[in-house]
Length: 266
Image 1 (cartoon, rainbow, N blue to C red):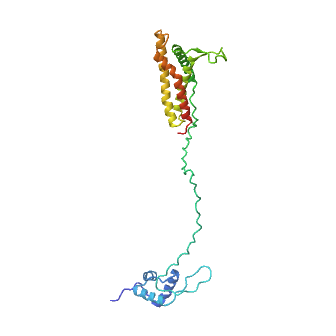
Image 2 (cartoon, one colour):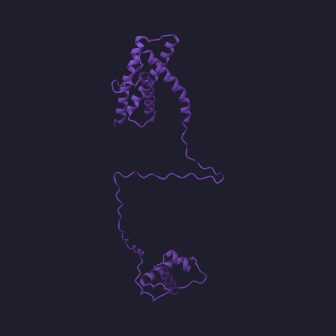
Image 3 (cartoon, rainbow, N blue to C red):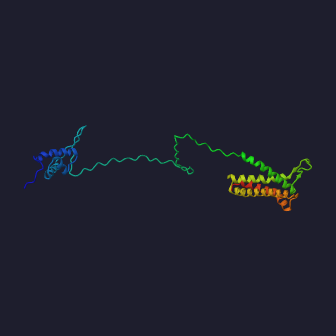
């Protein structure tokens, strides 16, 4: 048997070598055995013979559209190594600006909520609560507290005195008014210091408990006065007189201590 041919009109190897050289010139390298078989439509033995012929003779340079054709270079049967790319020179390194130790930390900006185009409502700044109703409520309480302390002072020995004898004999002063001015004024101020939150912790704690004590003493003084008047007593018992007489001294001490604590740094 004879081997089947791949073409009805087989060509000799001498006629196929120029076509193989043109193929190598287009590829820029020696074509593979399978490429020769595919492009020239030949079998394996002819492909081997054509490949051997190409490796013995130099390949023509590939055609160039513009400019003179380069000189042919000797080709080898081995694969052509690609030319390594040119090294990229690194650019200058820029150091980031120094950050100060006391610089505040960077804060990411908060997203602004999108406004609803269907509404036209704008937020207005909150207005502080009005305080004039407190004055209206305090007026009757002030009258009742004042009269109660002055009446209790009269029952416990407080009365009219001449503070400047020999200097201003006609000047007289009812010492009973010192009770409402001292006790109630201190209670109101200590309550303000306690609730303001702008004082040191020690001052706030002292103001809290002294304000509560002052308000309790004021309430007890009102109760004592009304009970004595309702019972028809014209002179208070000695223990009530003792407690009431100590109130101005106690108010003076608490006021001085609170002023010292408010101005302290602890």
